Length: 579
Image (cartoon, rainbow, N blue to C red; front, side):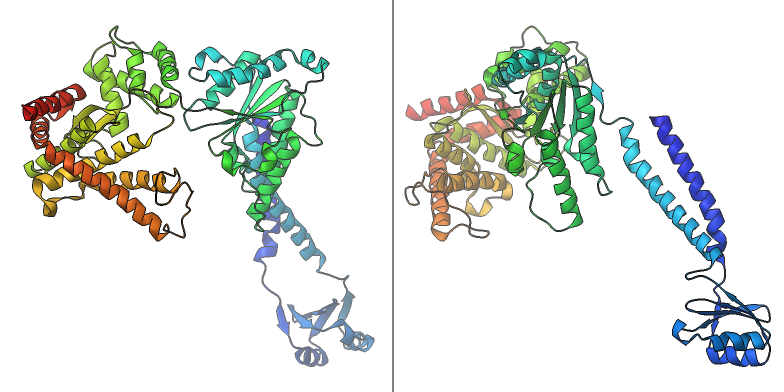
């Protein structure tokens, strides 16, 4: 196929060169001089006109071996004019309508040259991708054993495997093979891996493309690629066609009038017809993957096209442990490493995040010159992923360093003393990423329904840093360091009021924005919640000032302190205060 494409390209190039050479005289020739009819008449009377050639638009005349053109409408050209020129010794000739033969030949050749250039563009744009697209793979090595943490999704796809392995048994009872399966979920949850494992388990051909593969600069190419994809899939049936990021081709049709909109709708319509239209798709199953199912066209989601949707969500604690075990096959872990402990400390991590965690830990182990990954390497990798890379080279003054320690100590103290807060895992004043310090809290269990108590605890902890700055340095010495805390608290309070019905003043209603802002009473309620949580955080700091100072001293001395040490310091200060 590649040789054929090269041969076509070479032939078109040769045609373009030859056509350009032949038509060059036409383009380089001088423009014929035009004269008035009165000048022609005087030259004719003087006997200087040697030849006259009659056209529809006028006369070509030769005066003293110089060609000229006389514009003369056909309605004014009469037999007397021709007879007069003949009588005065001029040779008269007639040419058919249109341009003369030489010019006509040059014009045709020019058209051939333009067509050749366009053909060359088409070859480069359309034929070149077909050398490798769409690529079909027969023996996929991946199996469901390589997929962990998605047991429900694998169970849902078992019947697709059974249908592909024994189609006759299902068709005997009148069951129809599903046309398509749409996998929906956040990025990094394993949608592509599951599709490959599905093809591997079923033992069928697998063709993987992405929605962006159907984008093309020339009109009609994207539509033809859809047709070609399904034509190739039917030839290899039974076959799985995996379209990653299908939202790039399956977005809702909006009725736009531009050429790009019409091309997009034409491509989507072709996909709809191929999946469930006049063309048969026997033995072809389409697996679509997206994290934006809300933007897909309804016609694409109906039964007969995508018969079912499979949600590929973030793994729970057991799923994370299973995923870590799969990734751990390719790295060397120390015997003391507990995967269950790592799974508990990585809530919200996707499968891709967990794979990256072990890879970063392996890099840290290689830097240390050891052959096994230990707990410290995993801890450093997790801190890097969550907080960002350490910036120990950043130079800050002693005053700023103490301010950061006070700020982070305020967060840690409020987290230890507020019921409903997640436990403190560590506190540090070492800059990470854009943050000058950080308090990491980790939940003991995965949460799916968050109570008001937990949300209010998160608000108090978020306000603890600014509250500590005000208590220690005074209201005129607070800094911009609480910007991200304020944004986080505002987001929580806004959702409590407008989405979750947790405001007695607004009630259990969903409130939408009016332009860029909410109604006045909603904004007042958001402000009230944040101010109350700030007052609670400030009272916690004032009542436990000794514990705050002890945490500040520990951070200044050690830079990073573990959660157990934070709780020990706070508990010791409470006992002293009680005594």
